[in-house]
Structures are given as structure tokens and as C-alpha cells.
Length: 442
Picture (spheres, rainbow, N blue to C red):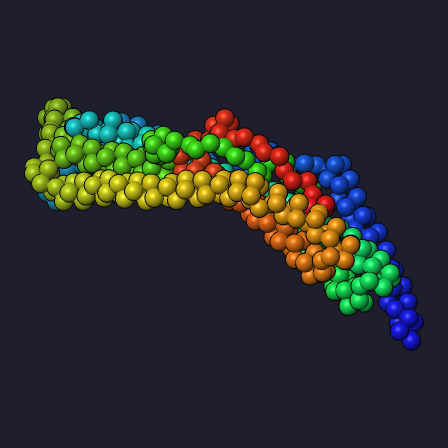
């Protein structure tokens, strides 16, 4: 009876293992061939498509058109007015009839004082520069978003690859345990346990595949696509760059898009102050005309000037409010600079920590665990170690490999944040590619 149950168990395990092996090999083969034959996305292509097709950048075109119209209006000289005045054209007695009508025709306009025209033009020019800075800031924000999503896809690819290697390793373990069980040197419970390990590995691989699909879709949506038209992204996950000079990064903060936007906003408000000051100078209204006297049928010229009084006092409140707006932007800029320095230091230290983690995992953890896995496997096959020891080493190595992927992705994330904060790419000399572990099988 015992032998019959063992035989059924071995047959079931062999069939299950054969099916899993075929599926795993097919999946690995299909994935490799699909990636090789399909389109490979690069970061440069992703950035170009995002900047060309993301709808958030289209609004700036309309804002610039609106400012073009405002510039034309601001560039207009004061207009002219034609005044026609008729007196005594209807009445009684001597004022009855058209012969008593006095007709005056005059032309009037104003003389702008305080260089108002240039002040208006300068305000629109500064508004256009502010919109241009807003466009650049939005473009940098999109650049940061697409970079982070690109890194997420790159990391997801490594997670999928690691999960498939884990499936392959679990299947090899089933083969080894099954052979030992058939030889009568291992209990059937170890076969069941190894089969369960395969199931867990396959479930993990399926989850990682779904995460990869979501990451690719999230990246494709950056250029307004509802489906990913690529199968993989190109890039290296593991780098060991030397330390970047933090003081130089601090100096590069002057290129931060948010700071540039505030600087341009301050210039717009300063232009508004200059415009209000120019409006404190009263404009002179003038008129010239000709008047006909019906009694003598003679014509006479007339002229007039109008100068408003105390206009500068009436404009004083608006000037105070506009100057307060300038000072507010200056305070916001100082606060933002401090906040950016804090973010930069956090990204800098986080990146350095991730780099140190990569180095430590590579040299002091993964390499010894890989050797330990080889030795534990050999000892298990000789009956000197238990299956638990063998599976534990496998899991420790898989966890370490996953931590290595996490650290690699973190280093890239922090590097992208540094580039976004400074609006400057990290020098290529800062990157040194290290050899990636190709597998975990002994």
C-alpha cells in the first residue's frame, strides 16, 4: 500500500514537474524571443514622445497667443476722437431755425506722460518670459515623471527575470527531491513541500508580470497612449559612481525650474510696479477745433488742454500693494531655496546609501550566499543537510537579489531627483557599470 501511494505520488510529481518545466521553458523562450523581436523603448524616445504629445504642454501655446494679442494692444498709441458740437440749433425767437446754429468741430487726444507705453510693453514682455519659464518648469516636471516611470519599468523587468529564475530553481529542487524520495532517502513530505515552493514561485512570477504590465502602461500614458507599444525598456540598473560634489550640486540649484519661475514672477510684479509708477504721471488731454458763427458767417479756431490734479496720490495705494507683491515673491523664493536644499541633501544621501548598499550586497552578501547555495546543495544530495537548509539558503539568496534590485532602482530614483532639482544631468563619468548577476543557480 505504501509503495502504491509512493508510486502515485512520484507519477503525479513527475507529470506536474514535466508540465511546469515545459511551461517555464516556454515562458522563458517566449519572453526572450519577444523582447528580442519587439520594439525596445529608450529613455530618449520616451522623453521625446512625452514632450511632443503630453496635453499639459499645449495650454502654453494658447497663453502665448493671448500675450501676443496683449502686446499688440499695449503697443498702440493713444487714439483720436472727433467731436462735433451744435449750439442753438433749436429754440424760439432768434434761435429758431437752422440759421442760428453754431457748429464746432474739434479733434482731441491725450499725451501720455511717464513713458507709459514702454511700461505696458515691458509688462507683457515679462509675462511672456514668465509663461516660457512655466512651460520649461512643466517640461522638467514631465521629464522627472517619465524618468521615474521608466526606472519603474526597468526595475520591474529585473523582478520578472528574478522571479522566473526562482521558478526554474524551485523546479530543479523538485527534480532533486523526487530522485532522493524514489531512492528512499527522503520522505514524501519533502516532495510535497518542494512542489509547494514551485507554486509559490509561479504565483510570485505571475504577480511580477502583472506589475510589469502596469508599469509599462503607466509609462505609455505619459505620451497619451492607452496601450504600451513596446515590450521592454533599455537601461542598466546597477551603477557604482563615485561621490558627487555636494557643493557643486548646491550651486546648480540656481537652475531649478521652480526658482526660475519665481524669479520671472518677481520680474512680472516689478514690471507692474513700474507701470503703476508711470500711471502716477498725469496724462495731458488736448483738443483743437474750428467754430462757425452763424451771425457773421465767420470761422474761428479753438484749442484746449486738460491736466488732472493729484493723480499720484490717488495711485499710492495700488503702488503699495504691488510692492508688497514683489516682496512676497522674494520671501517665497528664499523659503523655496531652503526647501530645495533640504530635498537635495535627502536625495544626495539617499543615493549614496543606495550605492553603498549595492556594493555591500554584491561583495559581502550575494557572493557568499551563492557559494553557500552550491555547498548546501551538494551536502543535501549527500544527505548531510536537510531540505529546510537548502530551501532557506535559496530564499536568502532570492531576498538578497531582490534587495539588490531595490537598491539599484533607488540609486536611479535619487539620481533622477537630483537631476530634476538641479536641472543638470549627472556627468556620465560618475557612472561605472558593474557586472550584473545573471542567475542564481549553482
